[in-house]
Figure 1 (tube, rainbow, N blue to C red):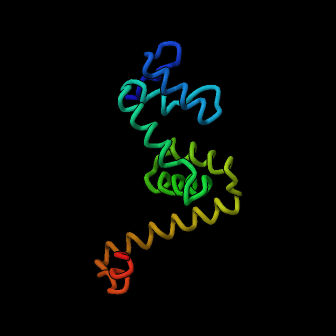
Figure 2: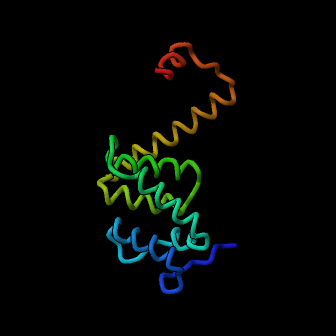
Length: 134
């Protein structure tokens, strides 16, 4: 059963505060349906927004790379909503159609080779174990 979407006018003061922050930070006139669905659970809404704000803030990775990573994981997880949302955000941040095509190729190849490794039970090479710990 789909979650009820909480609109701004019917939201509690706690939810409105989070919605206001989302709109301010993102420079949008309204929050998207993901946030409206989470508003059914104000504590979850607040925690998710604060975490997302921190993770997606500019840092060592630029915003386009972060959106492309989010898009890749969303595609792999089969989340149509997140794929649409983060695909739009990645394009807005500068992802070209050529970049999107390469992203899809990497996502597809990674999923294929991951399944092959799992299916074959391939042991991890010693040099990969050593480099992973540094």
